[in-house]
Amino acid sequence: MSQPMPLPGGATATVALAPAPGASPPATVPAGAAPPPSPFTPLWRASEALAAGQTTAVELVEQCRAAWEASNGTLNALILTDWQAALRDARDSDLRRQQGNPRGPLDGMPFSIKESFDVAGWPTTCGSLAHAGHVAQADATVVQRLRDAGAVLLGKSNVPLGLRDWQTYNAVYGTTRNPRDPSRTPGGSSGGSAAAVCAGMTFFDIGSDIGSSLRNPAHYCGVFSHKSSHGLVPLTGHGSGAALFGTQDINVAGPVARSARDLRMVLDAIAGPEETEAVAFRMALPACPHQRLDAFRVAVLPSHPIAEADATVANEITRLGRWLEQQGARVEWDARPDFDAGELWRVYVLLLRATTSVYMNDDAFAAALDEASRTTPGDDRYAALQYLGATLRHRDWLLLQQARERFAQAWRQFFTQHDVLLCPAAATPAFALNEQQEPWQRELLVNGRPQAMTTQLFWAGHSGLCGLPSTVAPIGASPNGLPIGVQIVAGRYRDLTSLRFASLLEDAGFAFRPPAPLG
Image 1 (cartoon, rainbow, N blue to C red):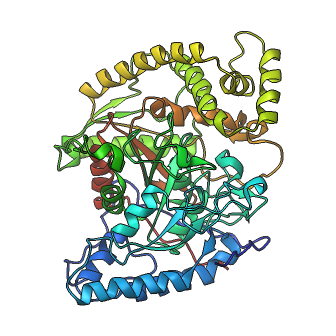
Image 2 (cartoon, rainbow, N blue to C red):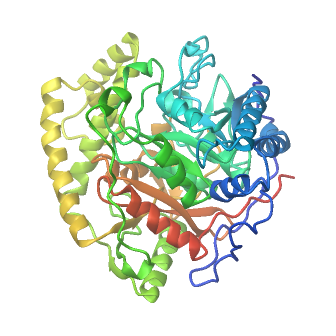
């Protein structure tokens, strides 16, 4: 396995991601007549090309390797690779097709995996030097499922230390940069995932999301991602010492890709109960009843008083809502579920830090206990809540579940009146790399004013606390060409509804656009 390290600096490159609302959709080519795949071809079209004999799995792997060789020295998105093993698996896939025995639409398709997922014989460090010597003994469940489907593993994508940042850098593997502008972040914690997909190094990646870790990277890099409903995709084999966890509170796994159709293909392969639970349970996601955008009931929330979104983001979401009105969709503006959003924010942060406290060593937990004892009652700043959450008594945790159920009921009621909620994935477009201080000590400029970076956790927890699915799709660009995405939230287990809405937006022209070549 190679372990490329990032080069310092890097030229900037920006590109508009999607047409203005109302622009003509990209030209489509009938199935079977499509040109051979390129490094930026979506997964679904490359799969069709494989089935039609227009390309081979080996050729697809070589295309990904060429893209990796061209840009990974600057971007540092894939930090562990094994191209020989990938080519071997690709040859096996091509042989299966020649014999008429493909395993399905993902057979032969190259993919990468977030570094925090176990791959047998490979390190899983979560960006920590303390885990640098850890080598996984078995594949994570999602890795095994993709291998069983015939997908070809290329490598692992980079993460921030402990998966706790909106940037992606660590002392083990270095800094990952945004393919749209290498002076900016690709997001985090699935930043390497989004950067690799955006740069054409892989056809798709699997990331995780507990605090927008799939959503903000897709928004920052101009790709698609899907935060699945909680519990839908097993997390066994994710995180340091994670073989103990089939599920974790709030946390989910999901795909990153260049098309909404790709997300659905991958979700079909990785979702469903673990083998030990499958003896009693089967997955049957509710179908989306709508085939056209004008059939959707759409709630639009471009910003929120608790977590102001920058005008560059809010204006694009507003523009999308106005365009949807023109298409005949029923749009309701500034729609919100019937709960106290400030209370939800507090409960979310407490439970977020409670569930991640399992990864703290004894010294870190002792320090958190000391900090929690110093907090002032009623202090709802993230800096205080993180320590209170990490040290919650079990009774307090149980009491918070009652509040969560109230929020969940409000969401259930909300989605009897709406099919999807459109809102920001993050407060701003991709921001300049900043590796000073801790993440909760940094600020962003939002509408020209400083905002605590942790404030944008609101857009993660607003839907994430109650396990709702969220699909992120590119919808435009900021004035300086940085990608803008929209978060499409649907009701619990209504994953196919948010995915269908994203696909229809994509068909209308709100699609992935390749980044400009790095200079």
